[in-house]
Image (cartoon, rainbow, N blue to C red):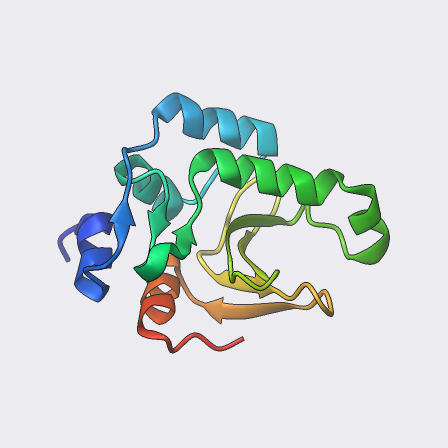
Length: 148
């Protein structure tokens, strides 16, 4: 199978998506250091093509690197969240559902070892599997078939 660019894959699913300047290598590696996790190859490749992706009507699909850092640190360091929810250290959030729920990869020993995407429910603190990969997450997000 030949490697297809992430921007081409996403455009094939929805021509209404918006792409941005590529993330810099230094920004991605700095983000990984701040969060204590190496991003998955899929996420790194996508960010190196477009530092974030917006879908139709400007809805986020993938946050830019600076928001990935900001939101993950906010969730991990918020004292009130520590009293309300299970720890967020095993998650790397990269998008939200615009209703308070977040999408994440699972972290194990400083790495994303599985490509699966999970949804965190802000109301009951559940974490539910939603896609086997970033590509399938984007596909189900853009075609409206994601269920969680």
